[in-house]
Image 1 (cartoon, helix red, strand yellow):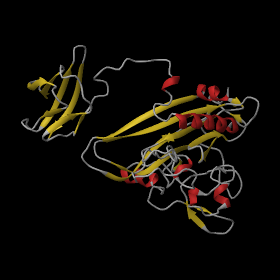
Image 2 (cartoon, helix red, strand yellow; image 1 turned 180 degrees about the vertical axis):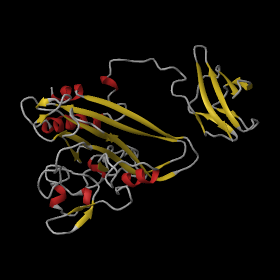
Image 3 (spheres, one colour; image 1 turned 120 degrees about the vertical axis):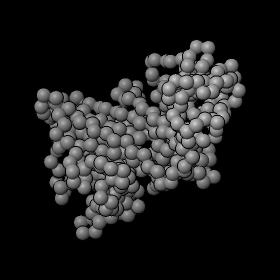
Image 4 (cartoon, one colour; image 1 turned 135 degrees about the vertical axis):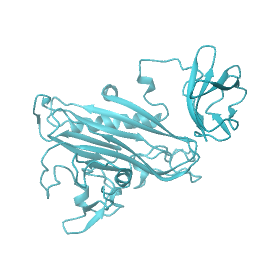
Length: 355
């Protein structure tokens, strides 16, 4: 089936991003960078598939040259942002079907309050050079890209029609995948709608070259001691019967997205053939870190387990039973320590800082 073919050509990745501090961060963005390089890396094109929440690359013509090239009928590959961070709570089930984040987000109009996750809310093509379209190097340059600006903070703009009118945009080279013009706040902009590497040179093709890009999701409020998930799918497609693999790639992307929506939590696990037995101490962490008064274990574990706190010289400073998930540390001097949680079968080591 098309669905099984799509699954066979997809790698799923889940990131868990922790805010282990006591700080709440507003206007937070997450960006996933992809330098796909279809075979020979100097003859590629870049585009965004807004409705399917993906950025993708494909060969600039029907033949991929060079020793590393695919030759005839080269493949296309996408990085789909299946679901990003949770939207800020508003005590309602946000509706689906709007010209807004519900286009490629998850959890909209499903009857559940405040379970909505942002999808792809922006994209940027990156040129591997030093100009305003190039790679960022310092923190404010990264943030500028994530918020839809050039590296130097100038607003990114695109021509709206055949006049000299320009408008800010969210998505780079949407290639007719944004029919409601969400990326330009609903303004009717034919030039933006049709914008791609194949039309970007005043209506003519851009020269193929090295391409990379960033899939963006945000903004959201990253609450203290919370976790956000980022689900990605790397999808490839090669149509040997046609010189354009992009059509097949979009078919696969649609299948992956439709399947994901039915089971957004833990999606992809059922396609993995290796199953690991997770221990009680698996993925255990402590917060806050640095700590002043106490450490809190991220989950409740057996009170039969013991803990040991050692200083940087390996001296035991404190030990006892894990009676609750809170371990007092106010009596420790400021410094770096190791917390050892010992069960009957394993030892979990966690380094922390005492303020």
